[in-house]
Image 1 (spheres, rainbow, N blue to C red):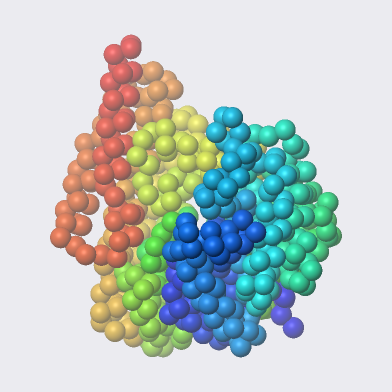
Image 2: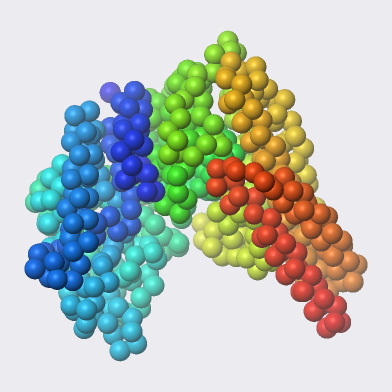
Length: 551
């Protein structure tokens, strides 16, 4: 018997609409005993239903025949996926953000707009709309096992989290979940409410609202609060969801640790947190393999496929020896991180007798580099793995947008520009650079028993990784010495900050020269966009000049 009843794999990008990508994932799921496939697209239901109550066939022919035919085409595709899942004994879920709708609805029901132009989240129309929408969905796609919904996100078109209204937020969430739960429960399907909350208070509201509707609603929680930050503490709501079944989500690809281009192991972290989940009564684990913002990329074109295999094996039996996990990955095969997902390159086994333990040491060491480069004392330093482009943006990422204070009060004091803190931060970044320079010898890609082309691509990736890590050292030096100069007003501190700019600009020239004339997989250019560093240097120069003039 498996340790976790539900063991899911999630698509969150357009890869879900490419059959070759889905079939490949299903093959891996069958091999490693994953039993749930999740398609996560915010508005995917709008691509599968009209709803006919507001958009009858005659209106669609008159106003939007393209959408009419697209919906029927999409239904055939999604039903094909559902049948393929059923043939393998795999449950099929859709994950959505609600409330979503097509813009044309506002023409048909103009009273949904308030005098200020905002859509009214408190209108009773929405509950009728949602119920009708999900009834139609379950008729159109009868093979669905259930729906996972995020009502607390700021990203849906109508959300109580961003649209002020004269209604208690918990009551609003309860009405939304109730409207969805009725048709879903009638068909014997599962409704899971996904926590996507920026604050602990919002998180609690969602769980309370689910409790007002029905205890059979699953609570799906990220393994860390707010988002997938491996340096953060375990989500404190795990194990505290009342009578509701619980699922916990893990990122295997690297939304916040290198986008799969710079591979790292989160295997050890997953095993530790899954043990905690199991002890707290969690019944399901899901593994995210990509992200909606980045196209043509995911764990299936990266060595980070390791983390998918590990998540599958550990969710089946948590106390596996991790050597078995790394061995299974080496045998299943490596993937080049410099090839796009749509190339669908087959995995290539690493045939050297000692490949598995060597790859294990490399992937663990690479995580140590990532943790010290892309985070600052455990705080997220980057904008989706890109360099900060202004001083304010750097601290917005560190403290406001991805801050830890909500979950660990006072955590951001570690970032205060005191002399002691700055010394620790700069030492951390220097350690990352030094550890990065040891990675090529640790991997020694040419002796892993891989084809020479793949070994060469891994060596190229490591050279790009070196540049990326060095860029974060430049960022940290400039950002924290500038913040210290602004805090102290000292001319000496200001000169120290200014002294970081010529080396940063020289580094930008180095990156631009390295990338000139290349034709890498496009995500490389996202990661190494030196224009962002030039923007940061210009911003800092302007601020320091203003400070000098003011004194």
